[in-house]
Amino acid sequence: MKTTISVIKADVGSIAGHAKTHVALLNKCDEILAKAKEEELLVDYHITNCGDDIDLIMTHRNGTENEEVHGLAWNAFIEATKVAKSLKLYGAGQDLLSDTFSGNIKGMGPGCAEMEFKERPSDPVIVFCCDKTEPGAFNMPIFKMFADPFNTAGLVIDPSLHGGYDFEIFDVIEHKKVTMSCPDEMYDALALLGSTGRYVIKHVTRRSDNEIAASISTERLNLMAGQYIGKDDPVAIVRSQSGFPAAGEVVEPFAFPHLVSGWMRGSHNGPLMPVAQRNATPVRFDGPPRVIALGFQINNSELVGPLDMFDDPAFDRSRALASEVAEYMRRHGPFEPHRLPADEMEYTSLPGVLKMLEGRMKDMD
Ligand code: F6R
Ligand code: MG
Ligand code: MG
Image (cartoon, rainbow, N blue to C red):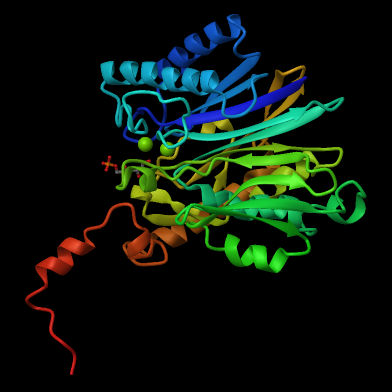
């Protein structure tokens, strides 16, 4: 029998402004998922939040893209929205783009990462949840986990990883996808993956047997809605150990707080700070962007754990570096590269300014 892990997330309201989900929303989701567990749609679940996003981590036996499981998550977000509205929380229901559920949560606002696999004798899985960034934020760390021998020693010294991994890459602008193999096609894959706003890793599989290794949410809310209506704060599921990177190799890339897009108004670059779940409260200039990591053992589809993986003093220096980089970036104010280039900004007054200057803008000699 196979196990499916579905992580479905949405921002349906927060305090104060966009900083943190209210506990009443988490309780509402808990009530709904507990019932689904009782009715055996779910085997198990864990609810968490990163900043203003609710993350529903669910296990079941229904496969990926299951209508009932997606409908359950949708319903939980709808009910949580009602609570958010009753408390006048900020951005109540902001990620829900439709009034009615139509079979699959994809394209409706929430983000979704899923994978189905036959459990090994022991199956450690790490779930990452971000706030104030976009799916491309995972490109660098996922690449490092599965393709960079300076991060993952196992790629060099463990025969079960030595064959490399395939990366399924989505072009979220043209709606195309391609699978590229590492290490063989590493340089070509990096040529795409460096463009984090356009090319995003969706799945990673092990080349030797096509076994699923990682799954990332790739929804871009602003592209779906055709205008800025919220962030596409992503989630990812990564399997580890015995033929996959060790748990320590999976979290290692986040020791470097790389620059990602999505800080303040979805329009600024800033460092991705790895934090314990209790510190997933992006407040300074609505940030800096955060990532949490929850480690589980999967036991007959049940979730054993979690271990809050970044709640480790060994990441203190990464957090200190992220704070220093945040300070440095902030001093650029409205200038690039802190502010995103005009065509990538979620909010922009530029068209209005250019219109106002129409009569005054002259041809250069
Ligand atoms: C939301 C976010 C925030 C908001 C900002 C302005 O996830 O990234 O930085 O963009 O707080 O929000 P509004 O436009 O709602 O006042
Ligand atoms: Mg928000
Ligand atoms: Mg958010």
